Image (tube, rainbow, N blue to C red):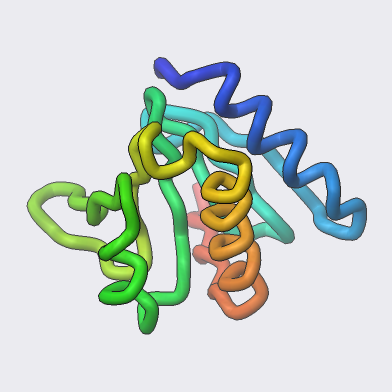
Length: 116
């Protein structure tokens, strides 16, 4: 699993600004995923952010620089996207993407865990 360690550190430092959040890091989606309060919030995959946001904002968010809809196994996932470096280069843009993810995290449903 290759992911940008510097980008992962940026995400980690940003999330630490919110001490009431329960943050867990998991290796998944070919990168490092930051679980917030038991729910997938944001991931670092290669040098991209993978963001989870309110699906009702998909059309608005898709106009942002660096946005690419997440597609897995030929299926487009509304409410998820990859953001390239050009989309999160500045501190303002980076924090805007993470804020979008955290805002939705409160409303997001946790994935049911499979019993092994």
